Image 1 (cartoon, helix red, strand yellow):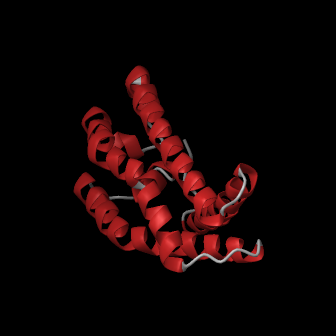
Image 2 (cartoon, rainbow, N blue to C red):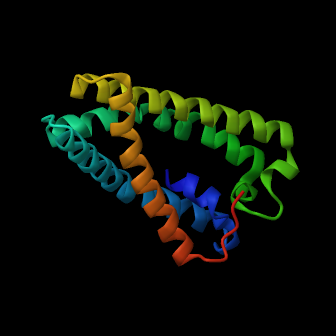
Image 3 (spheres, one colour):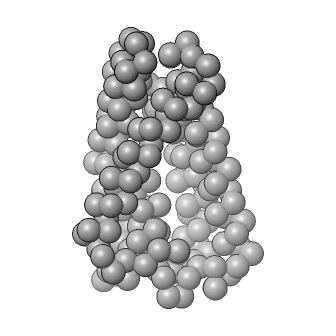
Length: 167
């Protein structure tokens, strides 16, 4: 998750070297991961309460944790390939990783997208079971927290790094 934001803001433009970039990413991920999970779980619980459903924080946390297993798989298997293929240029705006190796970039980003879709599917399925809800209600219960936290994170990053280029 942290490295996805590093990619989105072209973080290599701000890091003095590759080791600093990766060190900051891994250390930030150790802290940010559980915090974001708690935030998503709390917002999901609030959405459930707004729908008149009772969901424990522990169950919401468990659903989000389980659903993020595909993301963990991308960090373990796909991210190293991205680093081998592009190095720090995976996190730069000039040159873009696409301009360096377009086919490799599209394959790796496509794999990332497939795993992200798998994760999203698991979250929605978990929400459907937890809420004993229809697909539409489950999607809404997942989409609102994702959109709120995503917009908050992107907005916060844009405030912190207003000149950050997006890919």
